[in-house]
Length: 168
Ligand code: VNL
Image 1: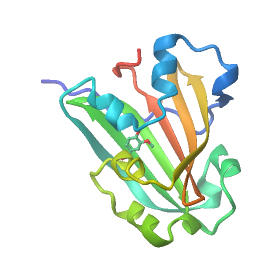
Image 2: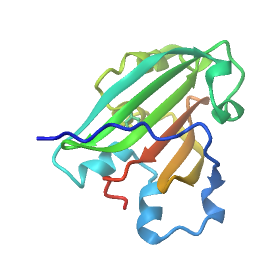
Image 3: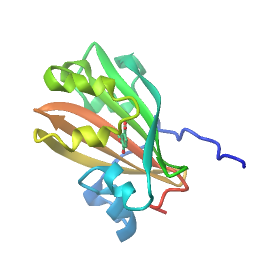
């Protein structure tokens, strides 16, 4: 059987818009404005959600995209990029950027996730707050970007919905 090529969508040059000012269709809005874990939402549409990390490691501020503007200046940022699969199909490409200063106390656990979906960690935390969600449409692919805080400390999540995801 042929397996689908895993294409990394363009994330660097996207423009982002406040979700409020954007007239989204109902099904698209339901996906993009999901308040809880995207992993949990995906679990309603397949048997088994898995994540495959593509990259986990520290990067310098200069290698971040426009996301730098959404986060405090720090020496290093922890970056995690994954493909999320609904059963065997790649549904979402996701990138998390965490300033090193956020990784204090219990948040140190964010660097040891491996195959564990980030959402299972994040959305079990009582100290989780959301500053905003922004949306983006580029190359016909929808994306969303959320700035969250754990105990007041920021991180930025970007999720781009691949052509085979149930959003479309
Ligand atoms: C992960 C999984 C991240 C699902 C996500 O968004 C997501 C992860 C940033 O495990 O890193 O929707």
